[in-house]
Image 1 (cartoon, rainbow, N blue to C red):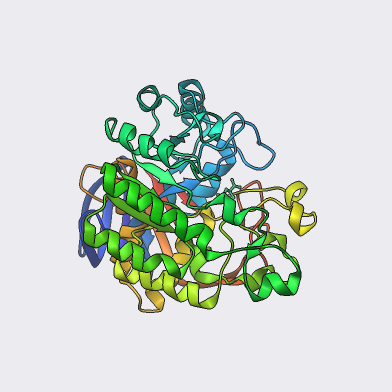
Image 2 (cartoon, helix red, strand yellow; image 1 turned 90 degrees about the vertical axis):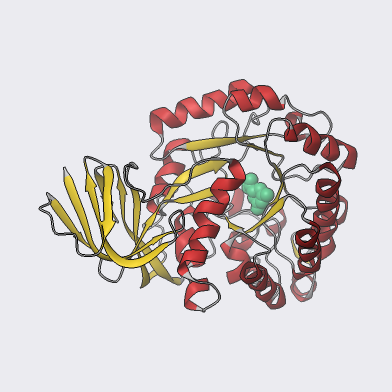
Length: 422
Ligand code: DOR
């Protein structure tokens, strides 16, 4: 089977490519990327006006399997990933049971091999039962396939436990992914602390809940030289501390998610549980600061924090609703606004979505290099469309973007010689 993708804007951060060119695929492998390839092909795809890129790597995904399959499972979650052009998924360990033993880790990998549309890389817990007390067995978890360690959903509140985790993980070359939230400060919080929390009469989460945690973890990473990844940053007060850590050469990377540079706390007005998320949506100033952090290279990863919940967890009073929103299918569309706004180049954006996240978890990113198996996304950065439940492939439909018009659409995904059309 010979497949020719014609006249797309070929963007590959692994090769530093940004040019109008053709991509030629033979028997599922990339044969060449060049201008005006004239060969006979079994199928020609016209990519005029589209971006042609290697698949995205999303390192912050809740697949909910094992234990909460009514929200999502490995099959439905990876189908949603494919629909979003995400061709590598690292999944968070706050499942039921949590991924704190090699057995659970291996079971996820086995299930993903059987049912997954795209490869899945499990992240294991830092502490047993995510209880923040006793470290898991990092070496055995790595042997079972874990690519990182995180108690995501919870911060490791005890500084000495976190310090030991950073030291111990270093010997296995595993990153520690922190969920920076001082639970003593955020306890009972429902939305950002500010005008909206006052209006709704809900307990607010102060920015300090995040920044206190960020600063402690950066200090511990500086001392231990362990590899730290800060998940889902949302507040402007982090920026001076991230700058300081860069200057100090601290071994860290930082991540944000599209909702933190698209939405503000006001999405929760009217007690909209679809916009309830942890950390909470913040203010316009925070949105601007998160964009600034991306522009400055302080934040180097954009991940979805895909957190599916069913109506059972969302169609309830605000204080009872589970935090989180789905995001795999909106990761590229929503992130592409950074390019349209002139904040960063398309190639830079794809570093944040492909090469940098792959580096955090130590995997090879998808690439258009000759000889690679095709893992290619055709994306229209200009198409506008309404987000409907029918559009969403995830089992859960919990997103505040439902009923909104967004720009940027994944049109096709090519996996070896299979072409998925959306
Ligand atoms: O909103 C969130 N939901 N934040 C988290 O850190 C966890 C996630 C979940 O698992 O639902």
